[in-house]
Length: 115
Length: 108
Image (cartoon, rainbow over all chains, first blue to last red; front, side, top):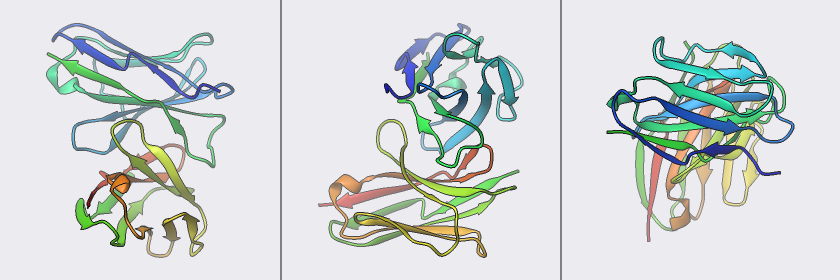
């Protein structure tokens, strides 16, 4: 069981470019959560997805950010027209069902730097 | 809006000391409270607490939940330099709401 896999580990984008972050949940997990961690801050919930459905996107910025979890393949967090303030660590977590009684398993994160 | 507050924000102690980290929560439809340890990468799971007053232990770490006070503490005894990390507390309903963490530094 490979755990939650995120790639890339590090991503550098120029202002105005697009960033695509990928998350493959643990085997057998059909629920995916994205969190953002700004420097020196805690993790902030962004979005909760099941296969082909967005369940809760209350933490997503209204513009430029989108997420999907298709029937096949990884979950994708997409940030369009990135700005310096998007620089952060983005963590993905998965659980087998919702709500899980065991919290979530986190991936190692993608560190996005916008230059 | 759900809210989790941790204190202190930062703590520096000498190796061998005992520390207590605090967490208070306001989480609708609360199900459980979780503690994570974060070093330079992903948070790693420490404890999940669902029932009030029942201590969970793992080696030198222990934690307890007080549902009446909406709070939890994490104790670390005989601290070691490897305990240096950010300790995150999170309230769980359908998602985790994290506090900002306590940065613990252990001085040899």
